[in-house]
Amino acid sequence: MEQGFIGEAGRCLPARRGTVALVGGLALLVTAAFVVPAAAARKPVCGNGIAEGTEECDGADLRSQTCESVGFAGGTLSCAQNCTFETSNCLSLLRYIDNGDGTVTDLSTGLQWEKKDSQDGVANNANPHDVDNKYTWGDLAGCPIAGCPNGTAFTDFLGRLNYCVNDGTTMVWPGFAGHCDWRLPTIDELATLIDFNSPTCPTGACIDPIFGPSEHIYGSSTTHTLAPFPKYAWIVYPWTGVRYPLPKASNAFGLRAVRNAAP
Ligand SMILES: [Ca+2]
Ligand SMILES: [Ca+2]
Image (tube, rainbow, N blue to C red; front, side, top):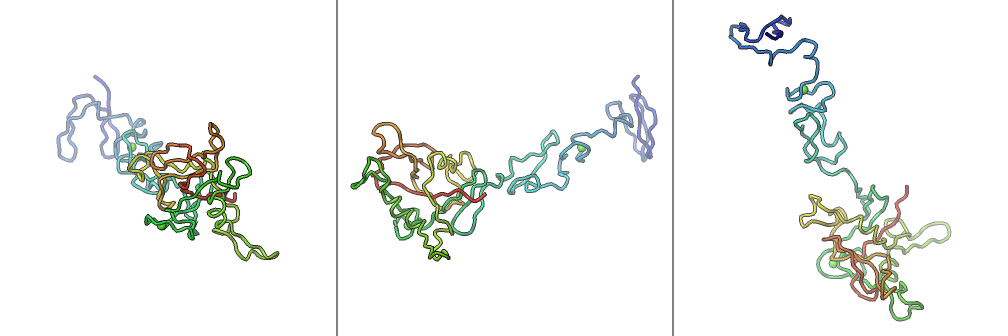
């Protein structure tokens, strides 16, 4: 016969398998499987609904923690069967900050991006943020060297964003969002904007909606180095993440400006 203990009125008494005890007037069949030594009773028991010891949680007992308190942006925290936090229903870690000035900062890369707007299928170059605008990259007539950056991406788009006037003492025209160093992203920087398998990307890949609407393709500052070098620049398709070379002279470059955010 194995030795066991029956808890009764706060005391532990010796018991044997098959012992019938009367507790509160009810007859209970108690086996050694249900009785543990008093010392072992202090160890956490995963599954008893009480978060104890090293358990992060147990059942509905989450120790008052939430998705936010364990580092996520929001969502519903739950407890896995092994008494650790289940965070699959928590929202992604906070990565982007909307600066409220038409820009978004990506904390993972330290880059500050232009938001786009005015998605109505009609281009309006007077508004460089209009998502429907298309630009040429370069390699146009007048280029002193093949593939030079003399397209409207530089002369119009970046020219407007970086329109800064300093009268010698004061910045009287501060540039877009107060900065004069907007540029086109490299193809690798551009690729960091493409999310895959995010809940915000029902078609498989996208740019987070915090950046405003997105166009079919986005151009980069990176020249394609294969033939007919240097007449092509890399673009990326935001709905697939696929990169592709596009002739710089094409009036087809969607653009999203970027700058290095202050540390
Ligand atoms: Ca427990
Ligand atoms: Ca538009």
